[in-house]
Image (cartoon, rainbow, N blue to C red; front, side, top):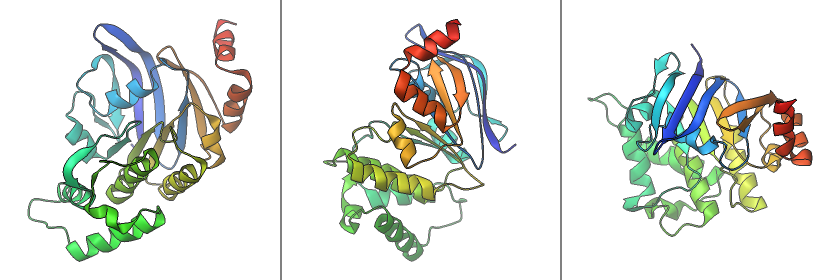
Length: 250
């Protein structure tokens, strides 16, 4: 099974149901995008799939290459190959970027294996150069004092180093100027692979000028309402989300 498959997913927080029977399949080798109005459940989906403790799953399944991930701890889900780039990346004071990523990679090795330090830094610096990140950032605490663009680049750097099977990017374009957006989009495009599935969550179709999705899904009231190609995003940009609601009624 080479896909992330979500079936009839229902989830709530503090007794309020957010996801209402969501179905979605993301095969390896494809980039999918989810769009939708505020409150439709886009970020909730990313958090539920990554094992966020605040959300209660009431039904459904989420299979990562055949393995059920619902109910697992976030670290275990990550080790299986799911990566989440946060809409608002957290600061980790006192932990340098270099040590943070190194510990994450070491944690994925067998108990008797050790990460090669020389090879690690060679790879890290090469990927930092590609993303336009100053090499001095390796000694800075994760995201502490970073601008919005720097935080997003740091997330893409982590993703690039970890090489996950599936990537979920929750509004990675949020708060980015055009130059930062191009750099981040280029980093995402470099991650495209027959061995990897990518889900991009966004409000705006401008992202698709740089990351061309194979499929675009529109989320409404906790479920996937419409699915199409890039042209669907253009239609949304022109007509707005009220058009989706009218389509569902008709």
